[in-house]
Amino acid sequence: MDVKELQSRIGGAVTVASDPLYEDLRRGLIWNELTPARYPQVVFQVATENDVVEAIRFARANDLQIAVRGGGHSWVGFPLRDGSLLIDLGRLKHAQINAEARTATIQPAINGRDLNRELASHGLAFPVGHCPSVPMSGFLLNGGLGWNSNAWGPACFSVEAARVVTADGSVLVADQDHNAELLWAIRGGGPGFFAVTEYRLKLYPAPRAITTSSYYYPLEQIEALGAWAATVARQLPKEVELTIFVGAAPPALAERSASNNGFVAILSATAFLDTTAEAAETLRLLEGGPLAGECMQKINQPTPIAVLHEMGAMLWPERHRYLADTLWSDSPPAELLATVRDHFLRAPSPKSLAVCVLATGPESAAGLPDAAFSMAARTAFLGYAIWEEPEHDNVNDAWHRAMFTALDPFAVGHYVGESDIVSKPGRAERSFAPENWGRLNSLRQKYDPDGVFHGHFKGERRNSSYSA
Image 1 (cartoon, helix red, strand yellow):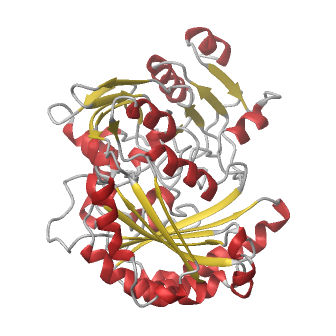
Image 2: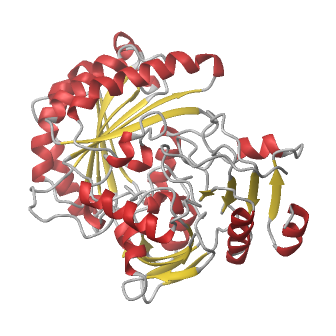
């Protein structure tokens, strides 16, 4: 089958590397402006599930290995693989809400902001991503550390069923009663392995009084702030998301923060509760404390998820260049944050960001549900180098690498969705419990014995002989 024949059989669009529009398309497939120098041979923008089946048949007939793009927000540009056929699911953005059953049936590329908008009209919610432009497919497959996930759980655990196209072109339904091992893998198994064309999600009643209190401190106080916040976290209910940020000082605090390279430490607590009185009483625990005299600014405001998404859009602006990495840690947050502070004092870009999320509520002996997602700890740390100009690539890359090299001793594992699994492929394996990693590889061998789908960035298959 040649490309022209393939195009006549499908509703989507096929673009080959020799097409004059190829490079613009290739760059547009990745949200991060730091686009990897990796080049698929064929890009298949599907319009239907049947198009996915046709794409897989074409890849197998032409010995092309397949990568899947759920929406293109991947920091490391995972879908861009040299010499591959890229199945782009980015046109599949439909969602259907069953308010009575509290379920949503969604296609892979709808983003968190659009899904939340539809859910909010029904008084419902889902732990969508903090950055509003994150499409749901990659978010769910990687685990989904979304809003209120301390109470609702990582988003992948709320996937009740999915439609999957496997390496032989079969369309399977995966739920607890059918192909349950595929559902197990979809719940946090990460990129590669298969193409998911539809998810059924369990929904939650939307909290009616979501409220956020944010406290701004001088960056030099972040070690003490981390120590105090760790004790407060255990006293807060799990419906409170407690985060320490390192970010650019707002204009009103810029002069006072100049000696700290323009950065401040921000303690932010978002309560997902139903009454303003309950939210106020819960967040009052953050008032006072040993650092009360050091607080430079406090903001308390209602923050429905739509507002939280507006705040997230400012933290992760579009049309910027990004490097991202993560770790899970059981070390004292104060020690980890002291290392972060030292690196932000020499950060080359004022837009770079650190996010340290502390688990709230008392420690529990209960483990995670049985799913591929299997790595977690009391603290999740996410660090981003964010800048705009290509000429600043090297200095930001060096800074980001140095920071995570210094942080590696604190790590018990990583989060596959936002870790640098390209330059540090071992981070993929360390994003799972050892037995879960082994089970994932066994399932991959069972459902894709020929390695049709790209896995993680090691052990790549031979180059294809196909030429367009």
